[in-house]
Image (cartoon, rainbow, N blue to C red; front, side, top):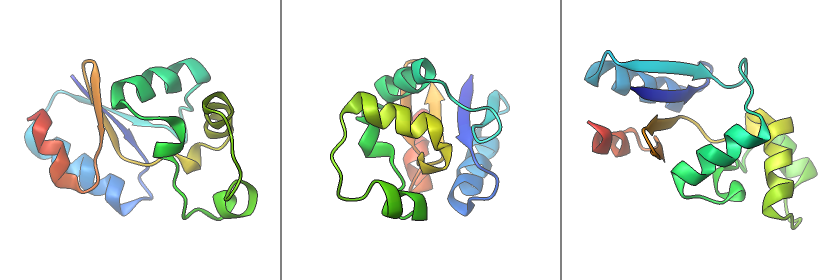
Length: 113
């Protein structure tokens, strides 16, 4: 089963979801703004992505620019920041088994199909 961490208000996330829908019926949509990730789930997701927390931060968001830009945080601090501010997490993130990828550009998702 494919899992997609999705924000329906984001055009890139909608494109990623459409790609998944076009390639499989075996998927689960997780609207992570409605179903927030806790620290443990986020750490597992980061492990599957093979990324550090700061690597999945949406740096163009106003909250990032006003509160976090130019500051140094540990990985654990970034995890807490992301758990408290889910809007800062890049999307879509697509998970298949023990691997996850960020679906931008949407063509990167083809490696799962």
